[in-house]
Length: 281
Image 1 (cartoon, rainbow, N blue to C red):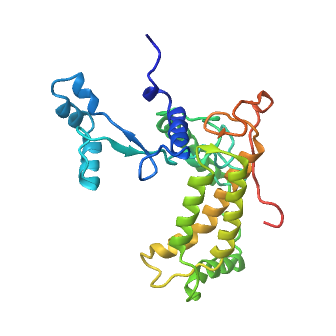
Image 2 (image 1 turned 45 degrees about the horizontal axis):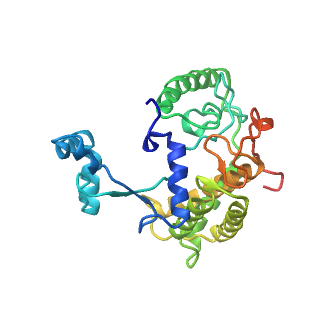
Image 3 (image 1 turned 90 degrees about the vertical axis):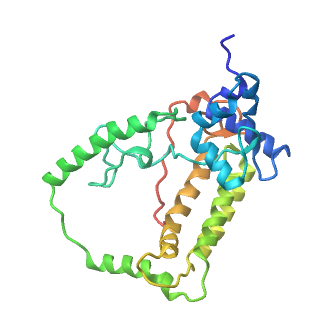
């Protein structure tokens, strides 16, 4: 029988099944599901040694962090975000974006993976298109001068970057980031619905307002709180773009799965969603 057992289906399919189990109340205590590989003892006489040899990092990770022996006990697992298939729109040959002189390749560039990335493609993507981006960036730098620098704009950017130090009783950037992560995980995750994504957009609007009041203390050197405060604007922009794009696609395709539109819409088969800021930002 050449059919795959359920646990060996593709990553996106298995992830959707896990999320469905969790949402329907059959998840594990920490919001995942149980993965049990101890059954291999029925197949191999030296199963424990085999597992430790084949999965050394997983074995040590669970043993050290959770005191779980995966050769004997089930482990809690769950899907999470680990790759972004959308990104900067670039020229397919030169990898230059619509901003002259800005080149992008790899995970931050869009287009190569279509609706779903296959495992292992990322390294090839980086090698091929990273090489292209570097070569064409060098050509662009040779052919173009640096141009004039607007010191007034630099002053504005510097003032905005330092603003969190001038807010002694503002919002905690770590808490804002945590709330954003939780909202995206819960409402814009692997299985999506219009109701949940619109709730996420409301939450993001609230966080954008609060993010403008993020404050930090300490020095500029080695200050991760400040870095988090600076990152928030970009995190919120990307987090808003994802549900807005997903709402426009009233279908399920590749990694985008909508419970309210579970089928493909062939009219959208060759449609890419592009997002740009409006004149008012």
